[in-house]
Image 1: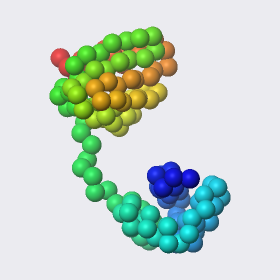
Image 2: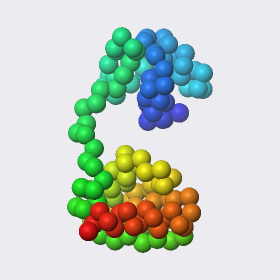
Image 3: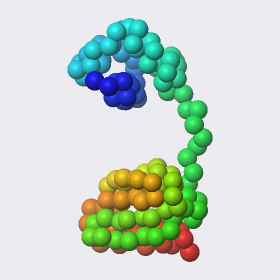
Image 4: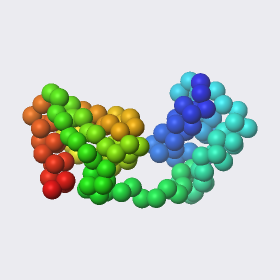
Length: 143
């Protein structure tokens, strides 16, 4: 089990329930098949910037608020192509993840998911008709 996976599971557990102690966290992780000592959990909590609240452990939101989709699309999107139920977005180099995150955060029901590389985002839609609708919406943001 990698540290990254364990920490991801910790985030999942604290977001889904009230875990107030390291003992409760260790027990919940064990139920997921992850063995962790108190020392390991203490280090994970510190590294992840978790804080203890009356409702249990929570992640601090130290990151900048996400940028809205229209701004990111207008700034970085260079090309939009439909391929059946998928859309390929070309961006400025190094900005595909920004576009993918903004699209994910927009929570468009037509978008099943995104996958980002360096300058390319793959957008998966349920079918080709919906993909064309998403393409149209993105193109309108560029106008």
